Image (cartoon, rainbow, N blue to C red; front, side, top):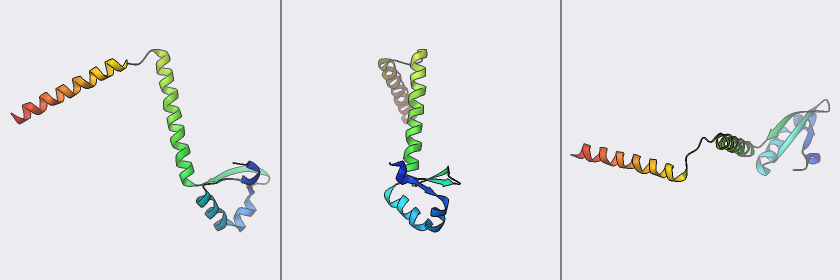
Length: 100
């Protein structure tokens, strides 16, 4: 995204609101709206916003995972699969007892 093309004054937004919204939505654009020469708000397509929020959530998960790894708070893959197999076996035993 070129910021030179993405910056519009609030007066432009006021006079071209429907056109701007249509353009932002159809082309998944992001606009920076200025007021008195200062950037004040971002006008963004909702799909772009949702993707951004999902990306931020994934980055937070990665950051938390990295911290946990550094602390040594993790299970090996073998231990994880062993736990899953044990849970499956407990579930199967419970199903057999219910059917009996």
